[in-house]
Length: 171
Image (cartoon, rainbow, N blue to C red; front, side):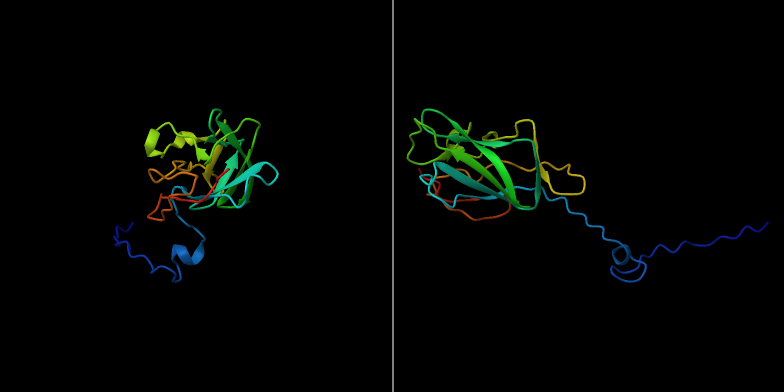
């Protein structure tokens, strides 16, 4: 027998060149956590007695179950229920105005007083809102930011990742 030694070639081909992983596969590694970037409502609630609330995420999401948004609505808190996934990054929730609802500015419910950045506003109701992928496993960050952002639209803030812009939702 022959005992010969050979040094291994430890250099990798440049990305995109022959023999590189990126030249031979479609592997993408993206671990960004979806977060809410905007809440909008395109209509007056006086139209048909309903309010559609569109929640836009930073990346595509997948919804299971029947999540809802808790709304602060005067004497009785209400729910905006999940209706549809309009686009990969946009979910539609709908609130139906009920007899006795009396509020100047529709607001989301919070358990954090004036800070209004509560994840408790979104109730998953046994379901989930996850990052869109072949095997969804990364839960979305459902905190509403920034502090003092709310649905009556008097504050409009666009800032860094994880901060939302809120638009008018008045009834």
